[in-house]
Amino acid sequence: MTHPKTERKPATVVAKPVRRTQAERSATTRKRLIDAAILCLHQYGYAATTTVLVAEKADISRGAMLHQFATKVDLMLAVVERSYQDQIDHYAAWLARGKGVSRNQINDLLGIAWDVAREPSAMAFYEIWLATRSDEELSERFAPVYERIKKRSYSEMQKLMKEAGIDADRKTIEAITRLNIAALRGLAIEWTMERDPERLEGCVDLLKDYTDSFTRQRRQEKPLKARSR
Image (cartoon, helix red, strand yellow):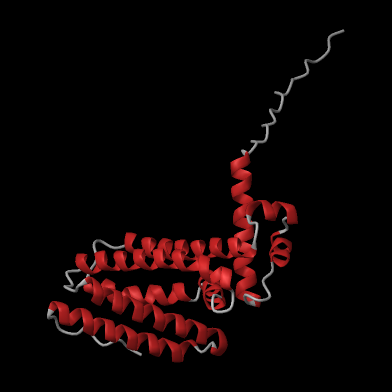
């Protein structure tokens, strides 16, 4: 008696899970904590953002959090660094879409800056920045970090202005950069309370007009076409 041959199915190979290194696990934990801190700062403000709340939102144990950030100030400074990096990433992506830098792009940069100014990480930065008035330790440690960020921002803007053919000295570029940043931050804070995009967009357009006037004077060009409001 013959038996039909049974076709053997190939054995299923189960891939072994890739084990992450300790450094990778640590980086993931750190990112989750910073993300949670940004969320808390954005939703609840600086005073209500405690390390306990952040650990809870990140679903990280208290011990694991203390291993990454021993104090609230340590965590807040990490948020400041992340906020600035988020801005750099936004601007880099925008610049990558163009070919070179023109006067029009310098003016359009304010539109990108307005978007960035309302990001949760930017709002978290404002909370920390304002808290330096009453938190002595935070103020002391925040100052050098912020000074480094400002210097880099001014340096990058000077490069963009030069590439666009705009003749201005370092002091002038720092002044207009500081003015634009301060104006956008103020409008962003007002946006959180008023949330009236149309009215605030008009303010941003006026800021663009001022910037266009500045760059036009340095290049002796005609005004850009009026924007439709």
